[in-house]
Length: 219
Image 1 (cartoon, rainbow, N blue to C red):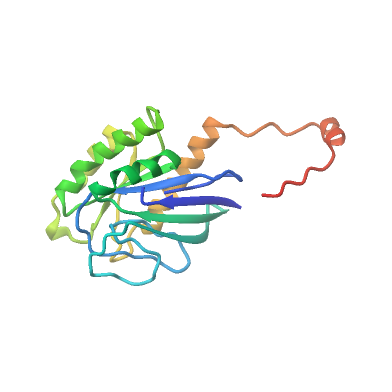
Image 2 (cartoon, helix red, strand yellow):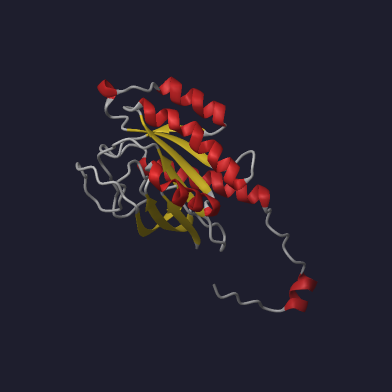
């Protein structure tokens, strides 16, 4: 079983190797969280949780953790989700999680242009911490159900995603739109990235198998 760990910034694991996915959001006052009891949940606000209800009170979280299991593309996955604070005063903590992150959800609210404008800063910070030119990330525009309050157009989100060379999705925790899909797509991006970085070893020949015998790995 693959293990995936998500933090506010998200942690993921492929094959048997621990991996971290980080969900980053701007410092806006989002006011809800959502999940389903049998699937992944997308961190869409500073109060993200895995409880199956809609939260209307703003409650910025310093850190909370959850575990879920699911199947993505017919491959079992364990999701360890760590929800951390997005406020500026917790910047040092956020950077610490970035160091272990294997994939990132860059989340902003389409009803708050300020959160959208922070995304580029987060992306550059990730690349600096990881010392890479590219890294698995997905850009997510949250609160897509609040069309009349929209301050960031879908075209602007797509344009920023092209600039960052990432996939763009819009989601709504309130109406359960693209919540699971965002995590699933990020897992696919991470798998592809890790397979390119560490291609699977070739199958041993019959002679090598006979020589090596049976290997038992306990994780």
